[in-house]
Length: 401
Ligand SMILES: NC(=O)c1ccc[n+]([C@@H]2O[C@H](COP(=O)([O-])OP(=O)(O)OC[C@H]3O[C@@H](n4cnc5c(N)ncnc54)[C@H](O)[C@@H]3O)[C@@H](O)[C@H]2O)c1
Ligand SMILES: [Zn+2]
Image 1 (cartoon, rainbow, N blue to C red):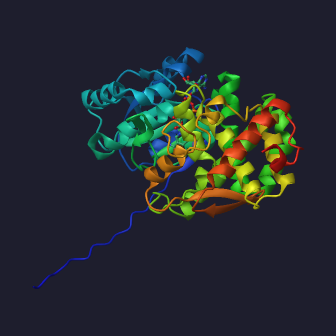
Image 2: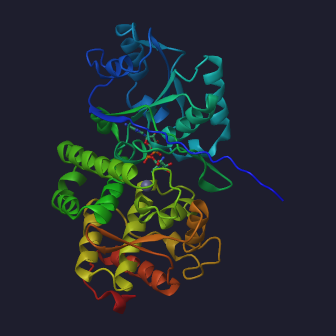
């Protein structure tokens, strides 16, 4: 039998800029208009805005300000339709009707591939609207304006979008880099303490796997950060975003391998979010996931006790709880769908390939492993329960575990 083939190969280069600014929609701030002016188009650019309802109620003047911005820069900015307000928070990713509603708006207001969907909101709304932008016409341009710490330093600056389905987080989604990102520090002022705090877990995460000096900064500034010092937070967001972007550019941006270093602490985090029916915010769950995998790293002999204690103490000083009752369900039974350990299997299924979990070999040094010892992981969970009760990390770990 004869056979033949045609081999096909091409590369696509992506680039986008994450801008740091304040008062993005103040007509006196030319940044947004300047970015649009450089897109190679002519005439006013058509933009449909999607706004997180939580942001809209925290900044009641925002929708009007967006309109005023368009009026002031009418040669470059044309609002294609009224601002689309959608509910904020994780629940928006659980509602397929919202995807439909936004797709209908893209259709109704005739957005094409050179038009923009500009989304202003927390990570959940960015994920939802990003999914819509990526799938309508196979991709309209996406401008992200992240409004939480987590969205500004992590979720809003990367290349992914998603909604939840079949009870699983991020089951539907695409890899689709944004056209541009605008981190506006004014939005941080209206965050609740919970949402101010949440994103700092991602900074601890990236510091622990990549940058010991950044970890030391977080340790030194923990009290100021917890007390809502905006200057310290700006430094945190900038460095975290920088490390995150370097990682995406350097390795495997569309996650075709089985390894996902930036998901340190996340196998447990995603499962805890689900087990808590999303009572835990992503960042809160990530803080616990980091603590758990750090404690486990120590139990496996990779991480010195002193480093573990510094990690737990920083997370505590930032205001995170490091244990939640959901962790104790079916503690060491990896096969039970409601056990935390089942999250390992779900994590592997989400990525495909061999199970690959990031652990720590030091502060700023990750270490990948391909198997997890269930009794040791359960012991790490029990240790966190002890830590949460006493807030002391000084007891010898194996003794308390
Ligand atoms: N795409 C990715 O790569 C990626 C990465 C990490 C996390 N995520 C996703 O991000 C989501 C979490 O995002 P989040 O932590 O930003 O929380 P969130 O989007 O759930 O928002 C939390 C709450 O804050 C409100 N809010 C947002 N900005 C505000 C502001 N400036 N002032 C007042 N209230 C405001 C929202 O309305 C919401 O009620 C999760 O769904 C997670 O899966 C995505
Ligand atoms: Zn995360």
